[in-house]
Amino acid sequence: MEFYITLFLISVGSAFLSNIIITPVLIALAKKYQWYDSTNERKIHISPTPRIGGVGVFISFIIGISVFFASSSHVGIEMGLNAVKFAALVTAIAGIFVVGICDDYLNLSAKLKFGIQALLTVILIAAGFRFKEIYIPFAQYTLPLGLFSYPLTFIWIVGVSNAINLIDGMDGLAGGLSCFGLVSVGLYSLVLNDIALSVLAFTLFGSLLAFLIFNFPPAKIFMGDAGSYVVGLTLAVVPLANNPQYDSVTLYLAVTVCIIPIFDTFSSMIRRMVFYRVSFFTPDKEHTHHKMLNLGLSTLQVLTIVYLICACLCGVTLLWSLYQTDWSLMLIVCVWGAVGIFFLALSYDFKKYFKNDPEAQRFYELKRQQQIKAAQKEQSESK
Image (cartoon, rainbow, N blue to C red; front, side):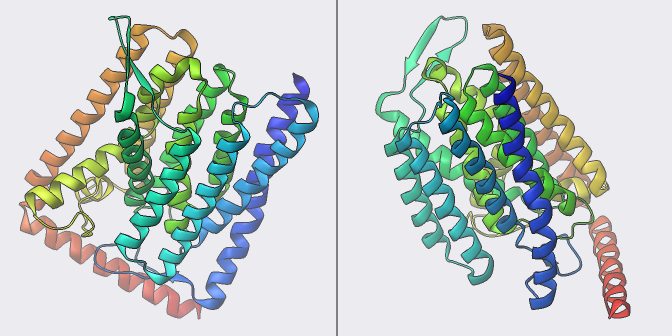
């Protein structure tokens, strides 16, 4: 057992250390070749910043899991993933990475991106990654999802992959909340004795943690679509490979670790398609972090609030994995409701105190212009 733990730590550590080395190299290359994310009126950052952090996340993640799986085959560790599932997962992660890196610099059309995502999702579902049933607390009844499991799983994988991408709009936000989600998945998989899934989650956590060192405000690099798609897909798929004994609660656990980006995406859909009557893909500045910033919170305050919510979500998932009671499942559902109330209150305050206040909007734009001028002056002086 001690040897297994050592191998586990080496795998996660190799992902962390390799990205600590790779990311500064990427930053240097981006500065040399001007691989910057452009600034505009809907983006928060005020100076050109590299957006190729996803390359380091992907490469270091592959290094970490390669170290573990290559070694584990020699020491006889039982894996929860069979060869078909593992091959499908690696194929999907690699495919979504290619889509993301192309989109970062070629601006792929929404239809093309969705088409490729759909194909990769079908491959994953065919390999066996899907919701199969759901447990009804206190009724002592497990509801088989039947054919409905296929469209539900399809919407889940595509939705979460894009949800992480949508919420990646502020320094340290997507990377930080994804770290909490991966820790949740890693811990409950470990408690349920799904070693392979725990390693996958913690290895990506190690890679993301290294990236977060350079992405924490003020960010030196962004993960870009390549990184957010890889993280989103992994967060969506890994819980679906849980021990078959726990299929009935997979939906509860999966939703819990992704609840913030899920609510943010639903808010975007309703706002754009129902109230504004525009395409869902129309960008705006009314995501959760935009609203909190516009209400006067600093970037660090926004991150503190989001991280605290994520810590609570991590706690309730771990609580269930330790006790596995109906009451712990109900606590999870109650936490969903609390997060939903937070989103509703935030939307109400945003409309009341910012969106309907022209003076507040003028002050915000003035402040932003001053920040842009200061950043431009600093850049010109550094040259």
